[in-house]
Length: 191
Ligand code: AP5
Ligand code: MG
Image 1 (cartoon, rainbow, N blue to C red):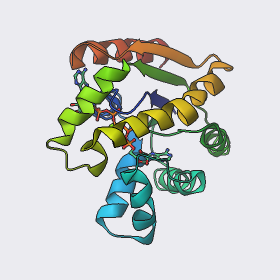
Image 2 (image 1 turned 180 degrees about the horizontal axis):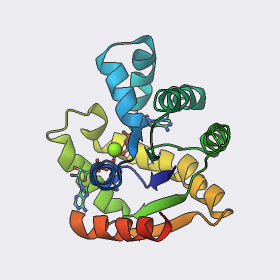
Image 3 (image 1 turned 120 degrees about the horizontal axis):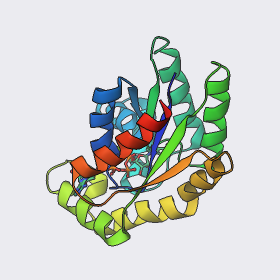
C-alpha cells in the first residue's frame, strides 16, 4: 500500500490536487470534509451535529472523524493505497490514524504539505464561495476562523510527522499543473 497525506490550510488546493493525484496513482481519496458534507446532505444525526461546527469554521470532534476514517478503511480492503485529504487535523487524529494503519500492517509513506500565503487563501475561498454553495466559504470571518483553527490545532500535525522524517513541503502557489507536477515528482521518488 502507498498512503499519502495531502496536508495544508483551507484553500491550499488539497481537493483540487487530490482529484488529479487519484487519477494518476489509483489511490482511494478519503476527504473527511467531503464525507461530512455528504452526511449533512443526507441529514443524518452525525451530519446535523457537525453542521453547526462547520458553519462556524470549527473542527468537529476527533472521535467523529476517526470513526469515519475507520469505517472507510474497513470498507476499502482492496485499495492499493489511500490519499488522506483534510485528515488528520489534530495530533490525536494523527496518532489514531497511525494505529489504524499499523493494525493493517501499513503506514503513512509521505506527508506532502502545500505552502500558500494566508491572504491568497482568503481570496481563493471567497472566490469559490460565489459558486460552491459551501456555507463556510461565504463569509470572510468564518474563513479566517478556519485558518485560525488550522494554525492553533492542525499545524502541529506536520510537527508530529516531521519526527519520522515524513514531511515534504511543496509550493502551493502557481498554476494547478505546476503544483501537480511538483507533487507527482515527490510521490514518484517514493512509490
Ligand atoms: P474541508 O472540507 O477539509 O475544508 P478545508 O480544509 O477548509 O479546505 P478546503 O476544502 O476549503 O480547501 P482545499 O485545500 O481542499 O482547496 P481546494 O482545492 O478546494 O473541511 C471543512 C470543515 O469540515 C472543517 O472546517 C471542519 O469543520 C470539518 N472537518 C473536516 N475534516 C475534519 C477533521 N479531520 N477533523 C475535524 N473537523 C473536520 O481549492 C480552494 C479554491 O482555490 C478552489 O476554488 C480552487 O479552484 C482554487 N485553487 C486551487 N488551486 C489553485 C491554484 N493553484 N491557484 C489558484 N486557485 C486555486
Ligand atoms: Mg477540500
